[in-house]
Length: 108
Image (cartoon, rainbow, N blue to C red; front, top):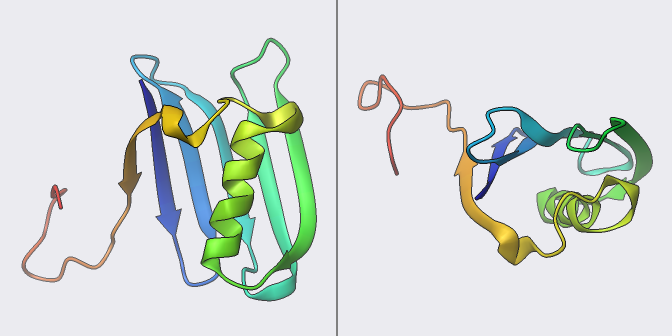
């Protein structure tokens, strides 16, 4: 089962893809400077015999464009760890602001 975990900030997206029950990530990455002409994407693959890393710089006007680029990296080229986004069974997102109502991990 593939589990995709993201932590989206104001101008970044951090992510990891896990293949349960393996506790090690198949890949991880960081998209920085979203909303600029010089956004930076770092994508690392650990699921192969030889770990691989890609670094791209390109315009990403918003988080949607950033996430679409992450999906492209997950599914195509040397950094591919899945063939289709439909192979992702679960998506988790880290939410930091729980205030007084949520002081521990909470299922939303």
